[in-house]
Image (cartoon, rainbow, N blue to C red; front, side, top):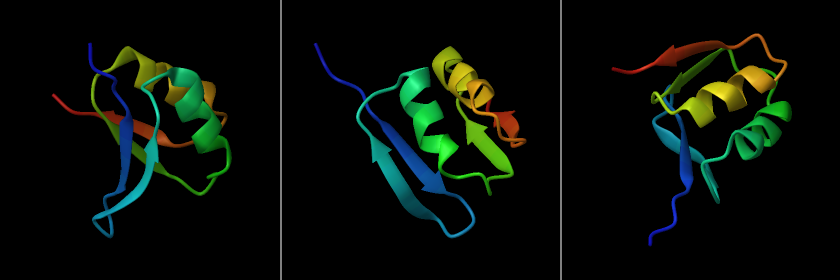
Length: 66
């Protein structure tokens, strides 16, 4: 059984911003709390990412790919 992590990419500069150890909503929320300047979150359709982005109190707009 494999383990999954999360790669976070700054799409404006095309660079890896961080690597998270898992794909849980809480881990993403914790990471986002320290980054209140984000305005857009581009993510896949994972419900965990949607929940993690929504749990964060930021005003960032979520954009999900198809």
